[in-house]
Length: 255
Ligand SMILES: [Zn+2]
Image 1: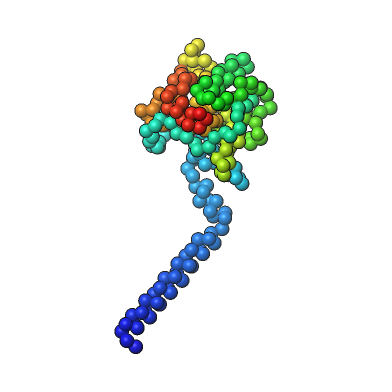
Image 2: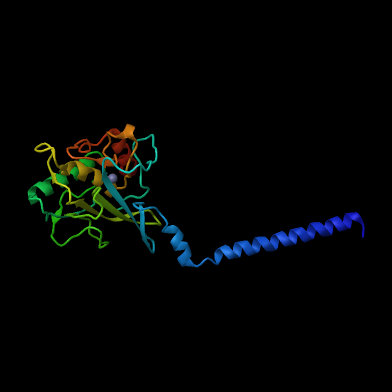
């Protein structure tokens, strides 16, 4: 055998061994049972937006925290708005308010305040985003995927959470199908113009309705003036009115 031929044989053999190893590795990765892969997906940290998944449907929970919060560093952004990447394809969005509450708030205060918050968003886009006509019902509740965009006051397990908005959307097509909103009744709620020692309902509702239409939280301190800033506190009314970045984000979705 010439040296040249021996070299060629050696090359062929190495190529063969490498190919076998590669094929073995690739097929092994396909053999990971689905349950294992699901476990990897579910390794998302606590309070991560990725909460639930079934079929083509996904759910994202936006928890609105009281300041101060944990030392976890939020992601930086320069635009002061962030899109979820999903939006409504059928407008206007209707919602049902459950006015039951343990704080003596009148149904009139709750409905007029929340509809005013919805109108804040409506006024800044050429679309008719939220239905001007809303309904009320004691039967609707947060957290149930039932085709009803429900808003209610109820105790929420995480005491740092002032309010939570959950949004269900399709993985394929990126369409929002439903939102539900809960105002944590472990906090005092009201109108901060009258007493500063409450979570201002218009303030928080306007922020939460931003999630309902497809905007994410902003945590950058230099953006703390926007409606979608991720933290609030007693007496905060900064989020009642939309700022330029909120409007830019809104109009990029709905015109
Ligand atoms: Zn939020």
